[in-house]
Length: 137
Image 1 (cartoon, rainbow, N blue to C red):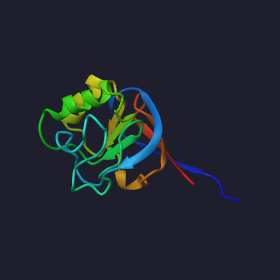
Image 2 (image 1 turned 180 degrees about the horizontal axis):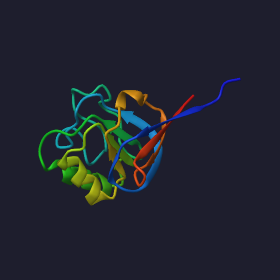
Image 3 (image 1 turned 45 degrees about the horizontal axis):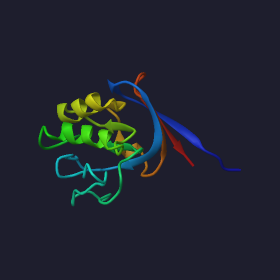
Image 4 (image 1 turned 90 degrees about the vertical axis):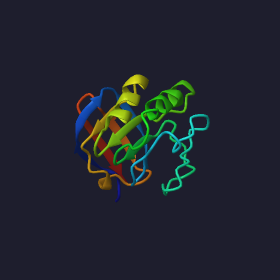
């Protein structure tokens, strides 16, 4: 008989809170300015395999941010438009993404081996205690 198994990945708290949702995994650094449309919530970056996917209510998993400091405001605009990710997980948090998460009250952790997070897996993010449970079927 099958069933689910859970693996726990420990990281570092960037901004506290808890979130649950499916993983949207980008294997390349992501720029929110020009890479995510704040009006639709869709990833528009041509270099992302998940181009066209919506970030809303998902746990957005990517190595690190890149690009303009305006990216923080794009994250905030996503939040204001009800299209923000439920949580953010990075390998390495950098100031643009961290600032956007803080401004938008989005739980965020980093120092996570994102290759251990399958696309579409159900995640339980506990940024207060700096870990994520990956539920595998």
